[in-house]
Length: 369
Image 1 (cartoon, rainbow, N blue to C red):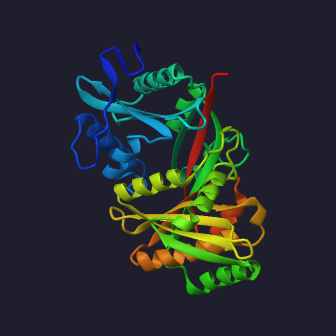
Image 2 (spheres, helix red, strand yellow; image 1 turned 90 degrees about the vertical axis):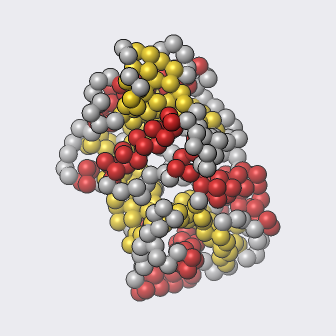
Image 3 (cartoon, rainbow, N blue to C red; image 1 turned 135 degrees about the vertical axis):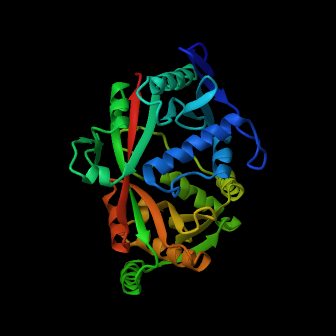
């Protein structure tokens, strides 16, 4: 492993590849090969592309932004792409951490390629002063429910199958399972009786609060208060032992996220709860949609500020947002969401709405000090 950008080992080359300037430009063939590997992996694992980034999303994400560097590596044997690795480097917070991911094409697994790629990623991160590496891998919930031996997360909530190749790979390389997230799916439309029941219950407890909704772009008058809630999202949700610092959001960071979503072809709906007496924003939830998977909606963040909890505001904003999503995308048939397994309060809200578990994702970490 000669440099942080490339490695040659036994005829296998691992090189950092350029990202196209925009989704509309063809870019180098390496990034196309990387995206094809990602698409193939998603089809192999899930049988659909509901969780797979589109070409535009991939290009814009891996370009990085003002808050995080992002790099893509491609492994080739005799010029044939056989695997990939990705590296994310936060640059405004959490500057001693790095995110790593490894993907190997079927037929080339169990040859040491994954270990070679991971070594390149870890070395590149270490050279940038990173001493804590994070990684994620998941799959359909049936793998956990099948009664196989489960490795429990250090959060003491949830686990992953010990027999999975990804589990064995992570443990072999010194990673520990810190947390497990559950992904869940809500079938649409929600039965009217259920929706009315949960909405009425939320309204009874949310006296003194009102909802405000918008599409795609936060109103200028609310953006400072909305950025405060976005900052809280990074500190007020369970992160188990990952030890992350809170993110600092301001109007510019909100606008950058909105612009990236727009350029990627994502459209969004947002609902917030406002405290009538003070005008303070107390809770929010966001949902996105993309034309490439028209039947699926994606539940993004949901947060209630600590000082406003106990008023059913999480349910209040979710119901309001589901209503405007149904009006904007009437042909959507499902909502996909993720929650930390130990976040029992938010899971209870989702269960009351009718979400059903569909998958899991393990959060792994390796610390060098």
